[in-house]
Amino acid sequence: MAIGVKNLENSSYIFEKQRLESFKNWPFKKNTSCNSEKMAEAGFYCIGGDEAACFVCGKELDGWEEEDNPWVEHKKHAPQCQFVKINKKEDNLTVKEFHLIVETFLKNQQEKIHKDKMMQFHRVTDTIRENIEKNFHPSTAL
Ligand SMILES: [Zn+2]
Figure 1 (cartoon, rainbow, N blue to C red):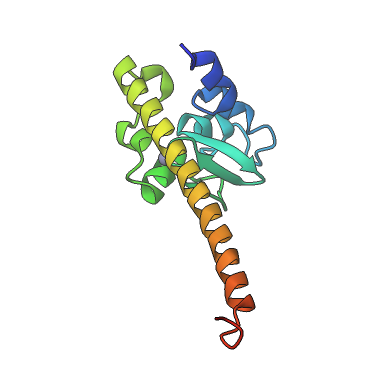
Figure 2 (tube, rainbow, N blue to C red):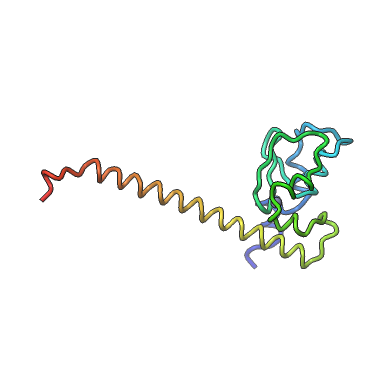
């Protein structure tokens, strides 16, 4: 099979362990409710500074405070997220639930790639249109 767990492991934050590693410079201490372990457990990985994103829904949140509860914040800002809906830490997930999360992750990733490609496409067509309009002089067009 082309996509083994190993490949997914290298290319994403599907696993809590890798999400945790991204929080090396997280500003909150172990004894706070917003520590790296709890952030990773709630589906977040660090994207720099005090900014974190969910690996499933892609929601980016910054301005975290040490008394924040990552699960509560996740649910508040992205109630539609599959990870939030299942609402379990990785160790407690059933195979079926884990499968559903990975499936949603892949689907969201594909949608994002598609969206980026469409935006790129529109930028190109906009430039072409601008050039045509700029160079089109009705008096010389016959
Ligand atoms: Zn999410």
